[in-house]
Amino acid sequence: MTLTVLFCADPLHPRRVDEHFLREAETVRASGGAPVLLDLEMLRSGDAAEAVRRVPRGIGGLWYRGWMLTAAEYHALAKALAARGAPLMTPPDGYQRAHELPGWYDTFAGLTPASVWLPLLPRQAPAPAPLAVAAARLPRGPLVVKDYVKSRKHEWDEACFVPDPADTGALARVVARMVELQDDFLSGGVVLRAYEEYSTSEARVWWVDGDPVLVGPHPDNPDAGVAPDLDQVRPAVRALGCRFVTTDLARRADGVWRVVEVGDGQVSDLHTDADVADLYFHLPDPA
Image 1: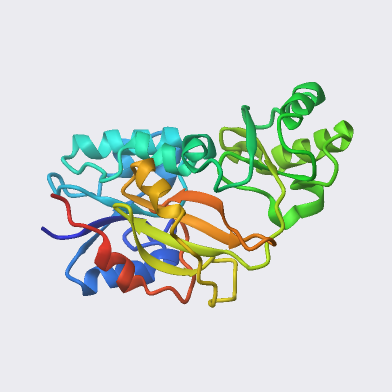
Image 2: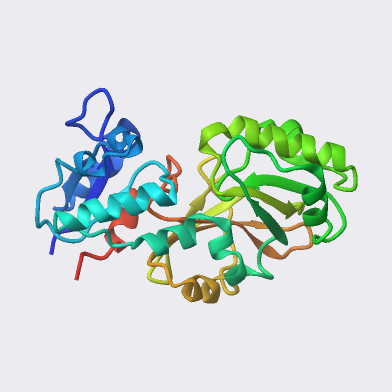
């Protein structure tokens, strides 16, 4: 069987792969695989059938590599592709489990910072009282704020970090600002995570069927020398039961390696120095 990968099309040149994923598409072609195209704008507008019109019927199982999708968008994509005889290799429930923190948190409990969350609609910040109740469930000390998928770490002081959660006014302000900046792209709700200080930058580990196939720096990290200990992480990845996932790891100040984030491998970004060919070599063809 041929490895077939669904890439986002370039919005200005819809017959081409989005430039961000062009290196990956060329790697797939060079290995004898077949890149096919998704119209992301059509998917996000609600027309999933039109979004996959360039996917050949009956082509078989597909891996997706592209921009992040909401759980609802991914579900619509999976349904439209299945109707064309091109099912996604990662089913919608597996995508959501790896992509959103509430889906993976219990599996990685003890390996990742303590967290609580409140479901929210976009642009609807929670009132101070429920936030204070949620924060009280965490260990005493600073915390960070994010949605189910992403943080606003580049707006650290205004929309991410809360030095003293007992200051309920400050907590509410930071959460409200995060919700405001995420706007319609807020994913799932607000997450409060205990702050941990790390002594290394983050490494990103790519896992296929429970095995680490590529270890390298996080895309935001220029340091390629971080080599995390995976002994404690491997059983959790396998317990999660998702075929293609990433874990971002950093060593805490006390020397313990911690899981900073988990993601679905289909929408996790690659560092520019990552060995693309090695990653795609380990992606299995459809059975």
